[in-house]
Length: 124
Image 1 (tube, rainbow, N blue to C red):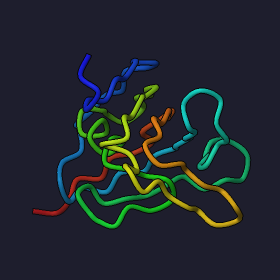
Image 2 (cartoon, one colour):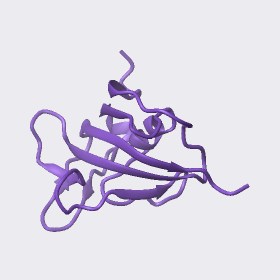
Image 3 (cartoon, rainbow, N blue to C red):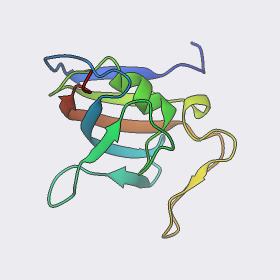
């Protein structure tokens, strides 16, 4: 197994078009450090707001990383995946800090649940 690659497990296949660079994608996202780490982002359920992002835009926000964006490129609205992101596509050797004492350690493998709510194609 190549440690530089994402692994993902299809939980539900969506329909429609997959997002491309410049498209607006609305997702629910839950992320934690693999192996029982603390949840650092969770937009599922209740009164939490989903994450809206433009594909290919930087910097990432609210727990997003390159590995999640990579998987989003092959997902469709209504799709849901469990994604394992290696450090090279996550927060790397520096880790990350999300305020309120929430930290991702350096070289952490991350585990996400990603669900695409909507894909809005960018105007041509």
